[in-house]
Amino acid sequence: MVLYSACAKHPWSESSNAAQVAFPGKPPARLPGATDSAAQQGPGPVPPTRRHLAATGSGLVGAGDRADARRPAHRGVRPGPRTGDHPHVQRSRSGTDPARTARRSASADPRQRPPAEPAPRRRPQRPSPPQQLQPAHARHARLPERRGRQRAARVRPRTQEDVDAGRPEPRYTSTIHVPDNHPAGTYWYHPHLHGAIAEQIVGGMAGVVIVEGDVDEVPEIRAAADLVVCINELKPKDGRIPAFTTGNWVTGVPSVFTVNGAVNPTLQLRPGEVQRWRLVAATAFTGLGLTLTGESGSLTVHQIAQDGITFPRPVAQDRLDLAMGNRADVLVRGGSPGRYELRAESVSGPLMTIEVTGAPVDPPMALPTALPQGRPFLDESAVDTGRPDRDVVFHSDARVFPAPFPNAFRILGEGATPPADPNGDLTRDPAYGLFDPDVVNHTLPLGTVERWTVRTDETLPAHSHPFHLHTNPMLLTHRNGRRLDPPVWHDTIGLAGGAPGDSVTFLVAYEDFTGRTIAHCHQLQHEDLGMMQTVDYVEP
Image (cartoon, rainbow, N blue to C red; front, side, top):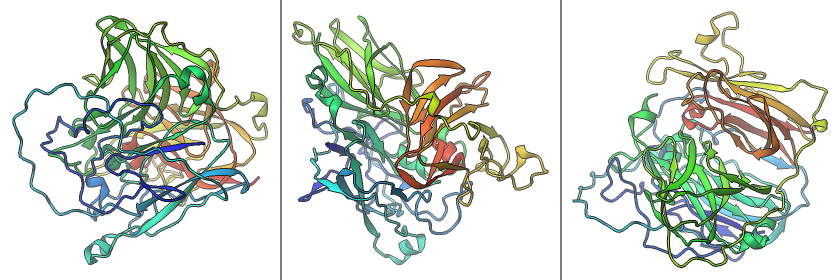
C-alpha cells in the first residue's frame, strides 16, 4: 500500500523509514501583490505524470493560525488551554494488523500571532498566459510495513502566556498506521481546533492523502494520467486571512476558489484521452455542484469512487454534487476539440479551464466496465433491532446570543445536549443542542450496525448542513424518502435546506476503534459555533 500526502508550502522531508512533514512556527505566508480577488499562484508548468501528483490549496495562513487571546469564545469552548478540538484519542481493537506508517512532525499549536507586516504594494497587472494545473510540493513516499496499535499523543498546546514569554513552540510526532485492508482511495486532512477550524481551512491549511491499492491496477485506470484536483475556498484580504470576529465574517470577505493553489488553471486533454481526476472539495462554507461544459457541448464524468471508497462500476454523471469535505474520483475522456470549463453552480467564475487539443488518441482510451468494490454493502438485516433508529435534526435559532455571534446552531433529536433550563423557551436556550465537551451525545457499541436518519429543518436551500461522522463511513440508503439503488458509501453527506429540508437515512457499522470522537456539521462556521456532538465508541 502506498500513501501520498501534500501540504502546499510545507514539502515532505525524508528519513530512512518514514515520511515526515514539519510545520515550523513562522509568520504567515503572504501573497505577493495579493488583492481581495487574487490568490497566490504556483510554480511554473509541470507536465502531468502518473503516480506523483497530489495537491492542496495555496498554503495561506492567517488569523486562524495564531494564539489570540481576543479570539471569541465560541459556544462549547472552555476558556484556557486545550489539548485539541475534542478528546478523540482512539484505541485499535486489533493490534496485529499489518500497517503502513507515516509520521508527521508538527507544531502543536502554530497559532502564534506574528508581527504586523506592511501591506504589499500593488503593481500594474500585465497580461499573462494561462496558468497550467500544478502538482503540489509533495513527494511520493513508500512506507515500510509495521505492526502495532493506533496511537495519538496528547500535547499541551502553546498558550498566550507561552507566546508572551517567548517560549518555543512544542513539537510532536503523530504516527498513523494504515491497515492493509484500508480502502484504496482519495482522502484529506485539516486542522481541527474547535473554534478556529473555519479560519484555518480558508487559510489553506489542508492536505490530500492518497492510499493506493487494487483499484489503481485496473488496466483502464492504470493507463490514465492520475491528477489531484483540490478545490480550496480561501478568504484573503490584503494578503492575509482576517480574524473570525463576527457572525457576518463568512459573507463579509469574498471567497476566492483555487485549484491546486491557482485561480482557474488550465488543463490539457487530448481527444480520446482518459484522465483520472481526484476531486477534493476542501471548502469551508460552499458546496460544489460541478459541471464540465464548453463551446462544443459538455464532457461526461464517469465517477468511480465517493469519499475514498470505490464503486462496483463507473457511474456516468452530467453533474457532480460535492458537499464541503466530499471527494470524488472520476474518469474524464476528451471529446471534440475546444475549451471547456469546470464550473460550480454556487461560484461565479470557472474553477478550471480544460483545453481539448492535440493529436487524437486513436482508438480512444477505454473506460472500465467493472471495478473492485472498495467496501461491501451492509445488509439491512444486520441492523441492531434491540434499539430504535437514531434520529438527528440540524436546527438554527436566530438572535439567541448578543453580538457578534448571535445565532445558535444546534443538533437536536436523539442525544441532543440538554437545555440549561428545561422549562424555559428552548429556542432561546444557551445550551440546548450545542456542543458541550462534558456531554456524550451518542454511545456506539463496537460490532453493531445501526440506522440513522439525519435531516435539516432549514427552509432556505443555501443553508446547508453536511453531516460528518468521524471514524466509520456511512452507507447512504435513502435520500428524501427515496431508496438509492445501489447505495453509496460516504464520510460526509450533504443536506440542503428547503420546504421541506433534506432528509437522509444511512447504515453504519461501528468497527475497529474505541474512544471518543465527534459528529458535526461540515459547514465549518456552524461547527465552530457549536453544531457538533461527542460520540463514544465502546466495547459491547
